[in-house]
Length: 109
Length: 113
Image (cartoon, rainbow over all chains, first blue to last red; front, side):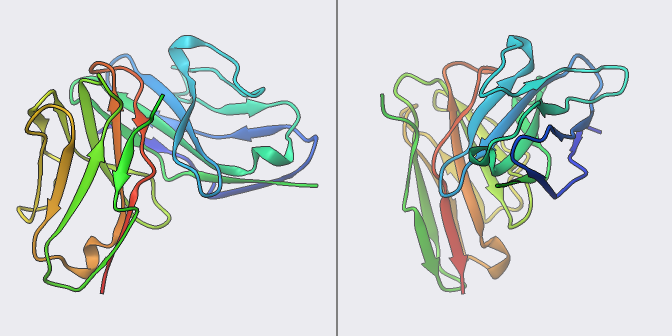
């Protein structure tokens, strides 16, 4: 079965602390993974795509096929990082994105 | 440039009524996707189109739900005889080509009373 799991509904950290948002997936084949972010009252927007290997707003994510994970990391959280984060898996045989349940990141001052 | 737009942004309707939700993709985008998001959940796939052809409608929950994209641009998601369980955020996304990055609209919040 194709599935994305984000085990934490809420992650609360202080400004300047490291952040790791967990994402695990289940997929037979070569996975293509994304992180989307939704800031308050805004639309879902792409944060990272694993094949591009970019660092956006200080966030990085590495695909670990052995652990079937795609955790999102940032060394020093900022208050403006507070948002809802969704991990998503692209299902190449169906053309759809499969989303996790999302993790709310709360960065306290 | 203009992003994906959706209308209405909010829709409140009574149980049993039909509703039509509209999505206007980014100009030139071939693929258009519909997702539904219940409170506290991630978006769930409903259906998608390449140009005007509906490629996959496996996510539509039942035959009260239908979608069309007759000219390969604007798409309409129609829910007939709405029920309270249809209340959700309905999200539309488009991509330049299939398997490319999907860009989302602001969503339509549907409330069925």
